[in-house]
Length: 233
Image (cartoon, rainbow, N blue to C red):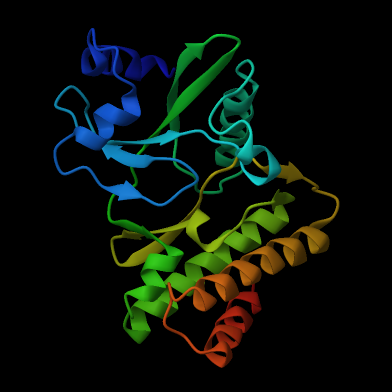
C-alpha cells in the first residue's frame, strides 16, 4: 500500500470486515463499471479523492474454475510492477495505491485500489455517446498517441480491448489511459510487431462491441474508425 494512503485507507475501512468492493458499491454516488468482476468508485469522507476498487478475477479458461480466487499474491504484485514501469515510461495509467487481501483457506481474493481519473469514460462509452466531430477527433488523437507510446516502449497489451482505454478531459485536451495492465508483456526490440498486435487486438474488440450493439456503427464505419486509429500511430 502506498505510504501516503495508509492512514486514509485505515480510517476509511476502520474496523469493518466488509470487503472494500462492497463498501465502494454502497458508498454515496458510487459508479459501477463493467469488468470481469465488480468495479466501482469508492467515495468516502476519509479519502482525499475517490478511488476505483476492482475485484481481481481470472480471465480466459481459468475464470470458469478459479473465479476470483488466487494462490499467493503474485497476481497483485504483477499488476503493481507493470503499472509502475508503465508510468515511468510516460504512458498514462491510473496509479495503484493499494491491494486488500481476503483469505479463504489456501486461497485468497483481492481488491485492487487505484486513483479515480476524473472526467473520464472508456472508449466504448465515449463512442456510444455520439460525440461531436471536434471531441471525436481529439479523443482519437489521444488514443493514437497512447498506442504510439506503447509501441515505442515495447508494451504489448494482450487484453487491449476498447474498455481498457480510458479517455479523460484535461483542460482543452484529451488524455488516453491504458487499464488492466496485469496481462502485458514487454518486447522493446520488436516495436513494429507490438504496434501491429496492439492495433489488431483493439480492432477485434471494436468489431465485437459493434456486433453486440454497444456502439451504434455500421461495419463500414468501424473499419473507417480502425483505419483512423492506425494512421499516424
